[in-house]
Image 1 (tube, rainbow, N blue to C red):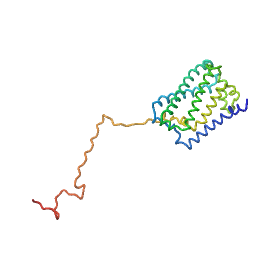
Image 2 (tube, rainbow, N blue to C red):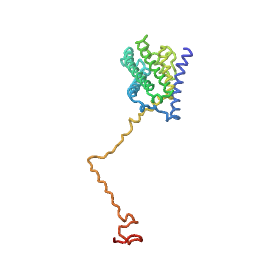
Image 3 (cartoon, helix red, strand yellow):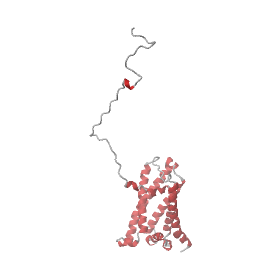
Image 4 (spheres, rainbow, N blue to C red):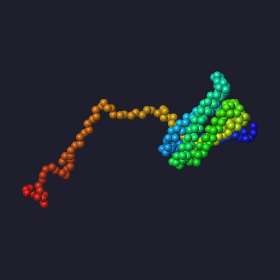
Length: 265
């Protein structure tokens, strides 16, 4: 165990977590108006309709796959009758497809931002840095998926190295030796992932923490409409004005005033 390993796999994860939590709290308290995706659908929607679902559904499957691979011990899946080789096959199939879809989605979104003038004008330097790190994390993730399954190079059981290290972080006893034994591709993917998490509160990705879950449980809205079977009430006819409504006027003829002609021709 070297000092670099202790710094990278023993201290840096907690620094990343502190920046993630502290940055999110700061952003919520002092920049609530900026807590948004800054949607650009108004400027261009054709490519957005293709790239956004690919990215969002793909990244959801990728996150679920990471949670299962890192949090579920290998002995649990073995107890369910799933061998290690079968686990790697399904991880390669499902994780590979999800990773390719996510990468294709983010590629379309980046292309859209580069080719659509109004969308490009609304893109900040912060967005560009976020997209660069996100693409790097996806590419490194696909590389680790291929490396871990043995499709490229020697097969590596990351659930014997990376997963124990990840779970040990929650009990404040990081297993530095286990993570240090993992191949370089896993080290690179982990470092890029921690960089992305540290950037998360300060980018548009922060909107993922405020998913409209309450929308699913809110009460129904009741709308009342006019029934076609009920006869419509007749509208009241306007009342004609009468003389007594205007005290200054009279309908009776009075005596002729000076200067007015008397009757006759």
